[in-house]
Image 1 (spheres, rainbow, N blue to C red):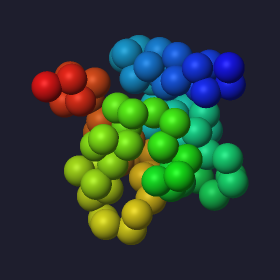
Image 2 (cartoon, rainbow, N blue to C red):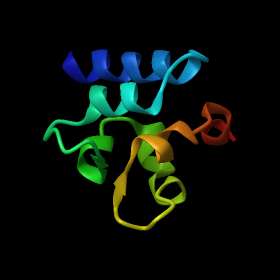
Image 3 (cartoon, rainbow, N blue to C red):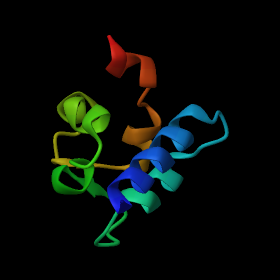
Image 4 (cartoon, helix red, strand yellow):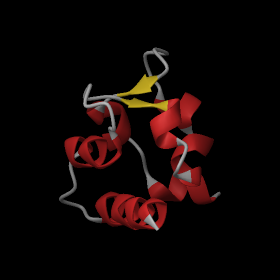
Length: 77
């Protein structure tokens, strides 16, 4: 149930033009390090599918800026 809630929250944040990368990190960041690891992103198939593409600095973590660059239509192709 919690995974579905987080998934819906993520999609809502992505779709809202006012959503900030920080909002998405807060929703997914379980260890409160202000980054989203592959493990934290794993609950969202759309995000994990594009994780390596989004990880611009190749640190195996997604920052708010990297997540903000995410576009839903990039994942649906």
